[in-house]
Length: 368
Image (tube, rainbow, N blue to C red; front, side, top):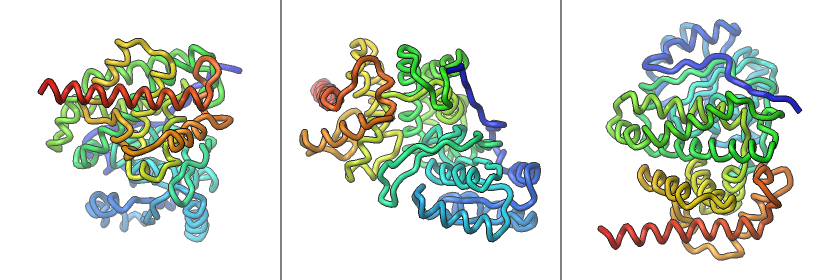
């Protein structure tokens, strides 16, 4: 196996960059189509409607789930309208659907995230779900997006919870990269991590610790500050390159396991990943100092630290074992962790992380 790293063709972040979208579409083709989430249509594209119509760029409504039914529907639209450039505009599932659909159609894809809630925009992989929202598989398009346009004016207007969830997703990047490096496990592009991938993963974690709280405050006021810019870059670019070029491990596998339980479906990807990080640290025998640092970060910005925080207040051991077994399925990234990983060990890690989170909340309440 060789060292491998992947990157988007172009990454452009700043205030007002969405105005460049028509020009970028016409760099790559003649007939563009935007697959847009409801929020993107109602809150973003309404301001660009005349420009899009003048340049014959169509808009297609995303139906809400990255699943085969939606992909088959979109394939027919692409074929019928002779689309040669597809744009994914919205959150992670809209973007992943656009990436897969463009790859299957053999056309370029441009990504325009309207929230900084995941590292999906820059990556060349996408998560496929069932129609009910249960994790099904990870798919790997042939190329990363040709262009990623991140308009911070748009990001700053989104609910703060999205930015915080993005920090939860980005939080996993360094710890999973480190596990893959230690065990010499394959990254998400089929090779070993490069130094660039590993160091960007560490930069991602350092950026979260330095600027996460300040960025949250800025997002709550819907203002753009250097801290917000740093966290948007960490959530989207640093995490996207870091996870893909260095690899996944326990946190995302535990996220996948958590999707087996319906109460977790109302929580965002990054929120579940964040709890997966905390459980993964228990699984990997992290030092108390490191565990405390990550718990403190999650508490400071409002990420989940207990099972109750992700809808599992009354979950029993049998329910948690379903999570553990799904997390340990053959081919899951949790097997990139050191040693032999079993569902029993993962169950214990879930319980231990929850117990720590609850104990810390009790201690905080007593000291108020």
